[in-house]
Image (tube, rainbow, N blue to C red; front, top):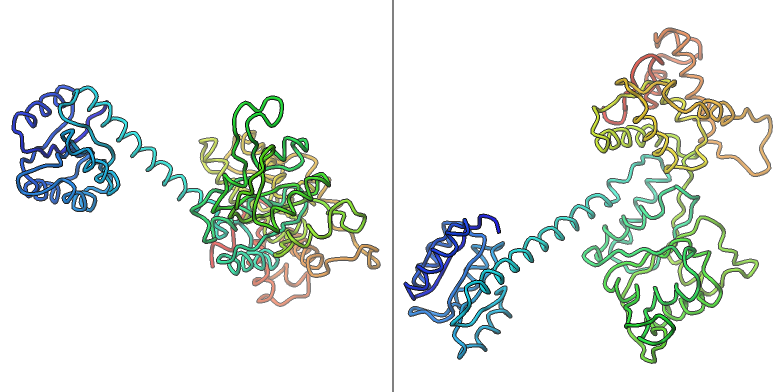
Length: 468
């Protein structure tokens, strides 16, 4: 037990004295009040960790004192002390905010245990509230890195659907951050006070997945030794994220469709229909296969109410510098090393590499690089050798339109950025000379150089976005 500050409110002087001596020997500080009025006066000017309060006092009831104590001591649990005859009053006090009660005469060690438990509950609730706020801040869409047009559109979609419970389908390659977007949708919505629960539909066999989602009754199958609450029920009032939904079996697709249509579930082995209030966000990294019958068409339209498609990292190269700087800062903090800079040449390699593993691969490469680089600056030599090889192949010089099509705007930007950097390197960093090499005006070159964060390759990269 630590050093608490306790307010003792009781009209019996002997009891106040006994509790003061007892808690003092345990290293706690106490204040005492012999009446409700005195308790109001003390609690209005001092802060306490806990309050012990008698229900019956000469000038009022401890129950009537509770609102004042809850207002002046919002973090202090209040334990009510009562005679057996006023047990109903004690129960009423707990309904109105008291943490617990103990009847007279009481065992003083039992009182200490009750007080310790009440303070532990307070600390746990405070920690849970802190974690919820931290999660809300961490997964707010404002903290998702990206300034590209396609990412801005996604941010706008998240904002538009924050007050509606519509089902969302997120598609995108592995590593693009589908769960991160799902969490951002949850923590930006009116359901953020509820739970966010995720499950990988491809990681469990059919029978186990059904039990996980809907729960089961005791004895419904071998090993079901107790009732189980499913994830639909666990996420009530919040969000259930169904990752890799394309891996769900045809039978489970039927059962999920029924749950979404009826807004009810039935436990494995159960007969009752249980209503559920949960928002569904589904995700997949591959085609759902509606056209060839691998995925039910009716379920597809049920989950694809709000579609969000995450672009691969190679098609939003303007986001790479922002992501890289963010990850380097985060990784240095996690590894407890001084924050490292990154050279312009190294950043150019990151921008031109195709990143088949998307944002996850970028973070992993930088984590390894920070760990292995002993100097203060990450250079091109710090990065894995396969990045340079991949970057050299990532920007082909198309002589004709490829069969699969082409993102012309992104391609032209990548080519322009590469040529501007080469001109800047060849001119020794003199922007007027680099502009002449590209037949550009100095003003235009300076604008795009700042936009792309271009500097001489031996200078540190500067996040141009942070200067605006």
